[in-house]
Image (tube, rainbow, N blue to C red; front, side, top):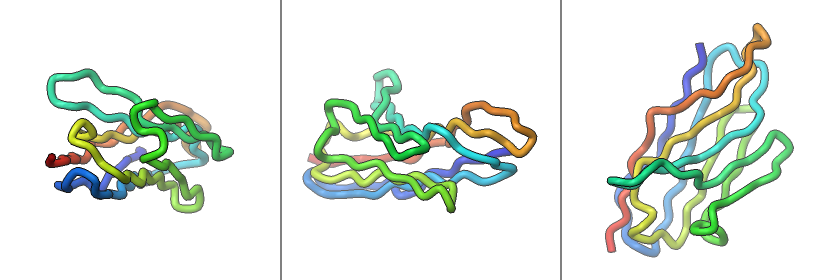
Length: 120
């Protein structure tokens, strides 16, 4: 009923930049919190950044000052601008959105992930 699709991942050298996008589609009434997570090889999934419906943001300490999360409510899309990338930023990046559908049912949805590889 609702699908999330990430894009923008790829291979980049350390110090470089990437911009990830996550677009939601389907029978969407509204979207509350939007969150980026990542999972490095052999590690647990961790929160990277979150943005509320009003624009309030929250970041993991490891990405503060380097990553910027934003959203376009008209497009049901979230972005993650990643600058000064480090090898430890390597992983699969997943988006998660708290969606209220047109039948007023709310739940979280996940994208399938996009791979970011930072070479040192």
